[in-house]
Image (cartoon, rainbow, N blue to C red; front, side, top):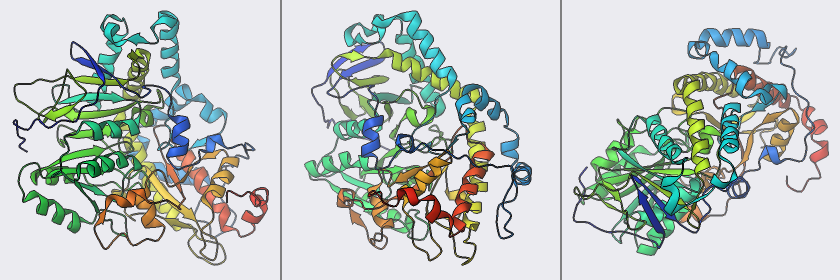
Length: 541
């Protein structure tokens, strides 16, 4: 893909930049590493089960299945044996179970089933112990240093290590991509909207299936008078309408180089559908720059940026590592764009300009280098477990769980117990499954009620619309399939809530078995009235 070296369009704010070696540090009115958890619980549109006040737990006994002959679930021992026989990828990586026992002991001590990795990752004992050791060794005065003196800090090496290890995850180096660290995932979207060289002629193309943080890009396009078009999804399986997208790419691509910007997620944060990475190449061949959101994709599948080379990649290490929170990243392909030393900006690449390898956006000229140490320890731990091992296990668990959920039926009526959103093919799915529980007449039971009942059994799942207003609008019954939309759909008020389970690095077969066992309780019409009696007067349902 060609870019014009003559084009020096830039959007710049008045942030201070400090440069040393290959790192630049930017001061901005945003908190760099304050935890986003409190804000996220409100803005992401879900109710965290860990925040529930109802902590009465009655863990499920998985020693046996169900006496009822119509149950699709055999006893645990038989189910596990069959699972291991059919899924060699899981069986060959059983060492991860030992990591879980050693590094995440509270999961088993509390008999907890954690299936909400798409909301919050879990951190290991190693990460905490290493970070605590560093705190004790270095003392309290190194928690925050001024930008101008950061290069002299003994902790600066952790910044370089974090940058290097992050890029290694995607099979590239700092000669291929520059890194911008931000104060969280949403902040990375906001930053991109400020530094990308938008103009009146920029055409932004995106999917109906997107995180609501895209509103920052939409607002910028409106400010510049640019056009923003939303590609619909197929109602049947929630995948991209390929004919519509291809038509739009070719239509705009006929205008030549710099046709516009294509923004899309590698995996839906709501449905778990994986959108093909081949769209990166097709968009670029038609003159589009590509911004790829990998916030929920990395655990589900690998991403080789030496093979697929979007101009921009956006994500959050928090979902991968659990700790530290309040950190996001934006990768910028150096072949096309250069990050400037003298201002907080982004310009099309000038061959004579090298730009910086790493930018950090933080508040009030202060930088918490200890957060980069925590990030380094987390990436070290992830590598020691084995990224390939994690991804193969997650694939095996999803291949068992998804068809098992589809088989669940009510005892008497024989109707489906669950309404599962998205494609029926496991090949199109990542580590996320969204669904609703139905009563015997086909009515949807309140997602928040099911979530709280699951929590009683020590099962943590998500409930909400998961910051995906476009797809939530479609699932709530609006006709978003047959026509190309404008970006106003991301501003719609959302009145939709569903359940979401997301398997993660430490998920085991016993976890997904216990989830199915819990859901099987709703096959009995007498279960819900008895168990939910305490909640019936709750105005939140």
